[in-house]
Image 1 (tube, rainbow, N blue to C red):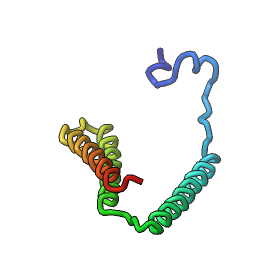
Image 2 (image 1 turned 90 degrees about the vertical axis):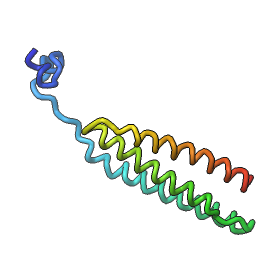
Image 3 (image 1 turned 45 degrees about the vertical axis):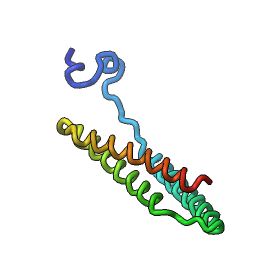
Image 4 (image 1 turned 180 degrees about the vertical axis):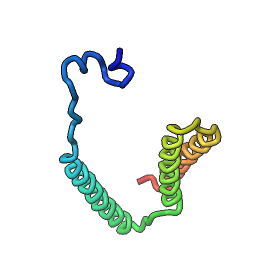
Length: 118
């Protein structure tokens, strides 16, 4: 069981002497290019949607900006919870804050749909 204590399975160790790590460095540029292409496409769609809304005299309301800010805060909070989860237990108040933000986003979504039924 010498291999198990080092994190290498006995079966794998018996088949090969040294397992070569998979080299994925060549694919990183492709993933980065696809990500930036997605960002470019989303920005173009957002500009098109903003132009449509401006033509109908519907601008971005403070409710819209508040919901976007809450989404950004929720994303940052979830990433922070994921980060500290590896080091220590997550305090309960962070879960309650995340739940409160989700509920607030649901209410904001309902308010935006009521105000702008487009």
